[in-house]
Image 1: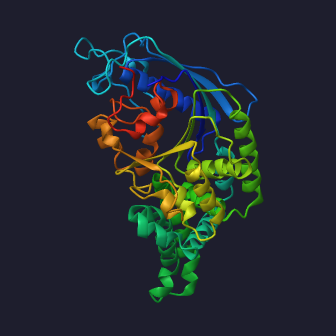
Image 2 (image 1 turned 45 degrees about the vertical axis):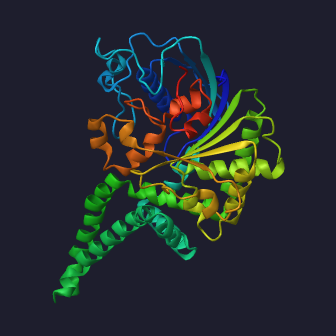
Image 3 (image 1 turned 90 degrees about the vertical axis):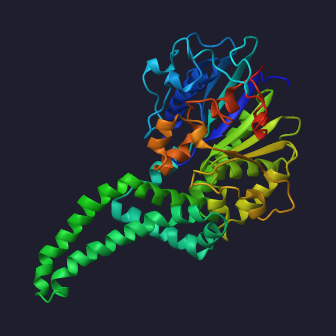
Length: 431
């Protein structure tokens, strides 16, 4: 198999309050973890100021990173809450017992003789994350429940429970939690009247109820990122209905920027997307295919959706444009679509054929790649994060503790073609 020497990557991150520079910093931390685990060297270049989307170069080399080790004893890790790397000592060798990185499945992962250069373009939507999170708490709650109503009326919730009941619970949770808190607040406010006291007592019970909501519920709800999820559902409605000029204009602008990136020469083009970013990617790539059906002709293109939320939007009855663009991508003969899913991630549509459910049963399906987070992390780390569903959901783009069948850095910056991840038995590194 011919190794990749030059690659262009377009990455569409998920719904997180991180700009391109922050995503680059996360990528660097994750790449260093991957290099320590697999036994290769990696160099992350600076990003060029004033260029949109933000881009930087990643160079991986089979010469190996001196002193790195590839097993759990090396101690490479990411912070359970934020995905940040631990101290510099985490990537150092774990002594003679650790040996060189690699195992029977991966071959001599530190073998010299190859070098891969990847230009990563971060097509983030941080401006919308921040915009949707702006405003006072009351306005955010009202807008969130309005989005909830839109999704219910357009059949989205019914589709979630039909195809992925855990995703349906993920949808309902923040709204039920907030509705319960509002009901308790109202109960506290009217409690004196309901107990037969004078309505004048509500002059103190009303403020008491408000204090409960502001000083007890809101801090508690942030443990579950409730208002952040409200904003996420507002974006889902916008990308499904396509009725907001600011979103539509921005997608057109992103399509023009991506069109320019695709003029770069490369052995392989990887279009990766995570979570909500998959909807942005589907719209952008769909726009390009609508205008230039043969834009990818002669190119090796891999469209990798990681923990995809395409059906979060596509199941809305009004999402006709998005569903049509999903069909265009599936039918493009020059695009290999890899849909990476995880059983322990409740925020994805596990084992659901996204192309068929989007209304294109006659189109080539996306190749499902089923991964297990606990294969990527040490037992201790997995035990710490497994109950934090948003943290588990981020693991697709974070660095590993152990060699595993899936590694985001290797897919986007490694020497092997990204298509090898479609085969669970294929080597992830040159032998």
